[in-house]
Length: 205
Image 1 (cartoon, rainbow, N blue to C red):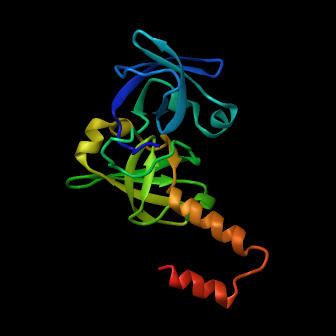
Image 2 (cartoon, rainbow, N blue to C red):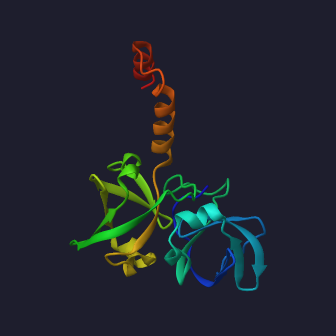
């Protein structure tokens, strides 16, 4: 599990045959889980200046290759004694979004992101979302877009300051929204909702 707080801007040294080699100050151990631009990967080899991770075919089929080149956001998995900040991040990318608009504000910058309409269900106004591994808050949600307001500190400390219209983004939606949607859709698809079901749901709040 991760928190969506970037610990380091690392550098991709090489990507070949599903193996991603990262130059980083972080001292990793074999088997560690590390998120690279929001993608949870496993350390399979250590180097004097970093480590190597392996990408499964499923991962490669979802992410955009631009997310495993150049400089990348890096976050080691959360430890039990760590302070919990950000929000619960699994490192499981749901889809690729695209920056469709950037609007400077007086003390922040708005980013509008376009995604496939089927993922909007899991993107909630004032809820949490992970963009390239960064824990952020959603402001507004449209039919196939959502808006983020990014404060100067976040721009300074992440790669978002380099994003332009057209930049591809690894997106992980809210884990609780996915769970609830999955439970409800599978629970009521076949038999429909009875009054007893509705009463049970109401009593749970």
